[in-house]
Amino acid sequence: MSLRSTCVSRLKTAVFDTLVVGGGINGAVTAAALAERGARVGLIDARDFAGVASQQSSNLVWGGIKYMESFEFALVNKLCASRNHLMRSYPSSVREMRFFTVHETGFRHSLAKLYAGTWLYWLMGRGQTRIPRWMSTATIRAEEPVINLDGCDGGFEYSDAYLIDNDARFVFQFIRAALDAGAAAANYVESQSAVRGSDGLWQVQAVDRISGERFKILARTLVNACGAFVDQHNIRSRQTTQHAHVYSKGIHLIVDRITDSRRILTFFADDGRLFFAIPMGDKTCIGTTDTRVDDPLPQVTEADRRFVLDNINKRLKLARPLQTSDIIAERCGVRPLVVKQGGGGTPDWLQMSRKHVVESNRERRHVSIFGGKLTDCLNVGEELCEEIVKMGVPLPHPRRRWYGEGRPEQRELLLRQCAELALPTPSAAAGEEGSGERLWRLYGEAAFELLETLRADPSAAEIVIEGTDYMRCELALCARREMVTTLEDFLRRRTKIELTLGRARLQASKGLPEACRLLFGQDAQRQLDAYFASGAAPVRTEQRAAALA
Image 1 (cartoon, rainbow, N blue to C red):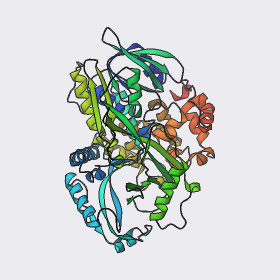
Image 2: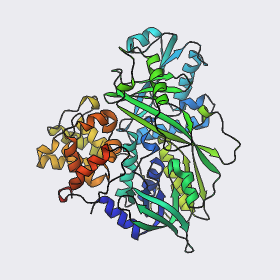
Image 3: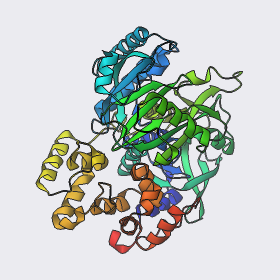
Image 4: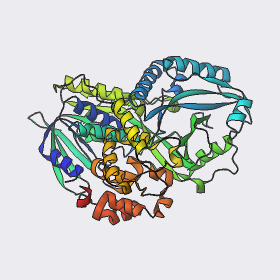
């Protein structure tokens, strides 16, 4: 049986201490924390893990410098501490990154005031990053000649943190940790309703969106971690809450790399909010927008594209302005922002923060998680452990560490063993990173399985999809361990191949059909057709070729 089939079977038969509905960052850390500490955990998501907001971020793990303008110093202090904690816990994935900022004359805050703010930000970050640096226009011109300095009077550089891989991959690492700790997690399983029975158990009516089968899941406690859909699921489960969501749409455009530096270029867009040009391998991710919407699944509009392109073209001196034909891929999602029910309107739209709120109904043993962001994810996991214990679910290992990379000595061993093998030279997209570092970051101690395969069969090191670094043996490992249920799961969320190559280049790829065969066996052609068919639903793909077992 495939990993997904096994988990679905367990969801049908077990009685869980906690069922987590939603596999974005909030649900993933909740499942990982509870499972590692000994609870019996189930997790379901109507789409793929990290399939909505958690795959559309800027890949930034930052301390919230923008909230200093609205004097939310307590929030900034907390986010800086959370950022530092993530950097220490995931040093291969969450790394310090320099932010390079220019100041336009006449901006609402002076350059001196903003620069002083970066020092206060550094102090609130406990001095855990490199110190800020004042930059004259001459220095900027020498170090970043691509920046248009017309109307600028200088700038500065400060540090925050950045996800080396895509956000969805980071989320999946928590899903994998939950699975390793004994949780039953399945993507494409939708909760259609939830009621609490007379026996005190939650009864969740679920449907497998791949097979169409309907079944019931039983759990002592229920966690609504549906992200942008928290309010909708609370209606289904008849929960009344003090909080709700409003949505802010943000988009990013991915284009070929616009500068060779490894900094994040930071500007203030025409609407006054921070605007970034972010390194993404050999590409650049540009954005974002901030538009109030009512739809949790928004689309990129021509006006969105025009806003991003106009703002970046205005602030850079490119050989030719970026056009829509230069766009390789797009990201579009909503920020679920927390508001009080009946609060009499919302505060200044551009100043609303991404704080999270955990709201519990202990009598009914139900928890809703509102808002949140990647930076604060470990706090969410800890808070949910506390809430579930208060609802009468004991955790046998209450102090067990449930997050973080594998043991440092195992990393060093993996790097030494990788150096002994003739692995493919990393592509330009990998920057200066070696193959060993990449394998450790993506797979942790499971990467040793890859080395065993490579020793037995050196041809398993073949790069399957041209323009990427993914070896044949990696695709086989993903098929076994990563619950890749559709081709988009692999190309968009387990990897960032779709973002860096784009669909047009993938359609012309000679290696993609072979990658599909390794991932899906006999279902390969159907998966390939479904991926390129506009608006196609997930195909049924529970059967795997015996060779992938």
